[in-house]
Length: 347
Image (cartoon, rainbow, N blue to C red; front, side, top):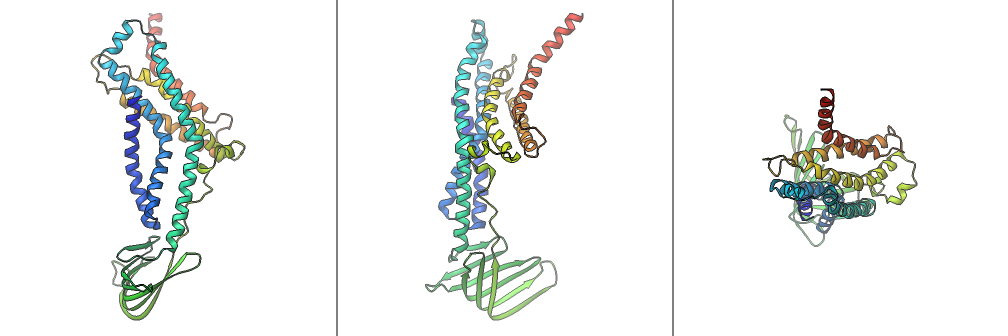
C-alpha cells in the first residue's frame, strides 16, 4: 500500500511539473488572474489521478513482491505452505478499495473537475479581455500584439508606450510618449491610440522597411475567440452519458467504466509479473510491468476512438480490451510450459 502511494505521488509530481508550465503559458496568453492558476493546477491533478492510480498500484505491487523475491522471503513463505489464496487475498482487498475510489473519481469527480476547469478558463479569459494595462508589465493579446507601458496615470493615460503588432508577415513596432487604451463592449477589440511617437514597420529579413513619425496613431487589436467550451464531452456528468445514443458520448462512458476494471486486471497480473528468477535484481521486472501498462492503456485509447467512430459495436464497448490483455498474459505465463508439455508427449 505504501509503495503504491509513493509511486503514484512521484508520478503525479512529475506530471504536474509538466502541466505547470502549460498552465503558466495559457495564463500568460489569456491574462489569467494569479488565483486561477493554482485552481487549474489542483483540478488538473484530480483529472490526472484517474490515469496514474492504475499504474501506481501496478508498480507498487511489482516493487513490493520483487523485494520479497529478491530477499528470498517469498521462497521461504512458499516453502512453509503459503498458497495462492493467501497471496492474493490482501492484494484483492486493497485492489477492490482502490478500484472503488477510482470509479468514484472517473464517474463523478473527474467530470466535475473538467467542468470547473473549463468554467474557470472561460471566466478568466473574459476577465482578461477587459483588464486594463498594468504599468511595467508586458500585455499580450492572443499572440498577435504586445503592449508595454512604463507608467499609467490616474486618468488612464499610458506613458512611454511600446506596441508590437503582427499583421501576417509584416511587423509593426510603435513607440509613443503617451497613449490611451479602450475596449469594446464585448471585449473582443482593443484600441491603442498613440500620441507623439514613431512607427517602424516592415517584413523581417527583407529590405521592406520604413519609419513614420506621427502625432496620433490608432492600433486596433482583435482578440481571438476562446477555444475552450463548456460543451466538452469529458465535462458531462455520467448520468447524461447513460441515456445517450451518440457514439462519442458512449465511447466516453465506456472509457470511464474501463479504468476501474483496468485497475483490477493490472493488479491481478502484478503478482506473476513480479516473480523473479534466481540472481535477478529486485527491479528486473519493472520494465515489463511498464510495457504491460502502456500496451493496455494504448489499447483502451484505440478502442475508445474506434467506438467514437462507430467501428466497434456498442455492446462490445471496451470490455474486449480487458479480455485481450488477460489472454495475452495467459499465453505469456503458461505458453512456454504448455509447449514444453506437448514436446514431452510427442517424445
